[in-house]
Length: 163
Image (cartoon, rainbow, N blue to C red; front, side):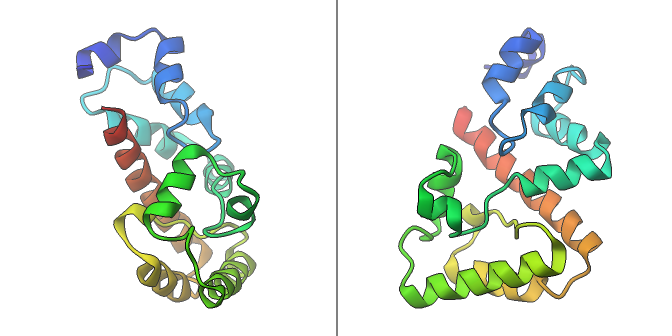
């Protein structure tokens, strides 16, 4: 599908095709549909995020699951998140690794009141654990910006998967 084809999609078709790109947040794609035509699909989608209010951005971040967290254990992750976490080996943690993820997730959530977000497809378990430990000490505004940037990377890779 060309960019011209994407720009010409009726809003309902655009939302149906791209609505799951943002974890449990179809509102982003709904708003992006109204911003077309795009010169770049990813940039257009992220423009909808940029235009959102602070509370909406935080809700977008909070819609993401914790890495190797309860949703992974309960098998309630989205298909995309399941595949992404598996790509980094988070579905094959040793008991020690699982405990480390649990501890770091709890510390990060206590510090920032949101889940730690990183594009797991661009790193590995060790890189994720290192980033979790390092980023827990950042200010929450810095972490919100980092989380949104990581969501942008996640969406870019999910878009590639659709083509």
